[in-house]
Amino acid sequence: MTTTAPAPSDRQVADRYTIISSDCHAGANHSTYREYLTKEWQEEFDAWRGKYSNPFRDLQDDGRTRNWDDERRIADLHADGIVAEVTFPNTVPPFFPTGAVIAAAPTADNYERRLVGIRAHNRWLVDFCRERPGQRAGLAQIFLNDIDDAVADIHWAKEHGLHSILLPAVAPNSHLAPLYAPEYDPVWRACEETGLPVTAHSGGTGMPNFGKYPIANLVFVLESSFYSNRSLWHLIMSGVFERFPTLKFAMTEQGSAWVPDLLDRLDNLHEQMVRDGRIGELGFDAEVILPLKPSDYFKRQVYIGASFPAPSDAAVFHDIGLDHVMWGSDYPHHEACWPYTRESLRRTFAGWSEADLRQVLAGTAASVYGFDLDLLAPIAAEFGPTVADVAMPLDHIPADATSPSFHRP
Image (cartoon, rainbow, N blue to C red; front, side):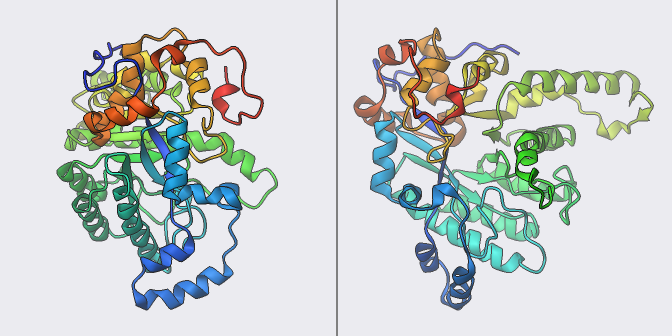
């Protein structure tokens, strides 16, 4: 499925790259979130806050302010050559058990409180994005417990200028219907009607309970990609993209090397279903068999947010299609390219053409999330890395670099 990248846009600065990170994280601190709660919830929030202890390294000590300090954050990103970002949640919203990206779906007992929490975050995010018009594309959070609430929140997000919907967690064998269940069709319809892409983040699409064992975190690391990736075949093979042909779906911080092989496998299974009506001993009703190949739906509607890619990740970008790949830094996380984005780009994209790299660094993200390259051009002229600088092969890895982009092949 090789595609040719479009020519670089005239709206981009001739000698510098416009860099849009498809993966950055932000959130308010607890005192700020309190101000985004209605008064009837503030007392209950105070009681909850007094019992909460934050376990996350990037939300402790001095580094945590990068999540909400506008001046510090924009200075970090501009110094790193990044002029715009897709803004995922990061901090712990009111009444959440853990970070928003990895928290399990709420239960019936805590749904109301958790919904209040994500709506507070969404209201804060609207204001945070307005501080830097055109430089932040905010992702609204929803839950799937109540479809009417989810649809209302999607329309609210559109009306308030947010740019995408974060796919909520649906863990295997949880109290929620699986992602391929038709009862979610009103959610996909609302996203299609509003033009808001659905974005899935690694670890945030629903993990099983790995238990309280010393090895549990390692098992999470080993298996999180599988449980994140599976949202793709759930949506393709259940016909979501067939029923909603203009819905956009982005998958962020989930690697990229797995995509071509998976699409080949799905196409092979689909071919058997079309030809024989079955796969081995398992038969399928005609309504389950898609009219298009799975890879066709991918080409039409799916995008990969490639966070801190190493050379081995970038090696499959042309196979996926450059107009379906978006570079991301993962700021402010420990594994982020920051503060060595230029060095990471030099290592990963040595030998790449300028046109291809412009597509991956900005063109696809602008198309998916609606960034205005005209607006970003003067910012890139001041802060973007030069084409010549990025073209220079990296001769050594910074000693204190923590991103996997420097340590994977």
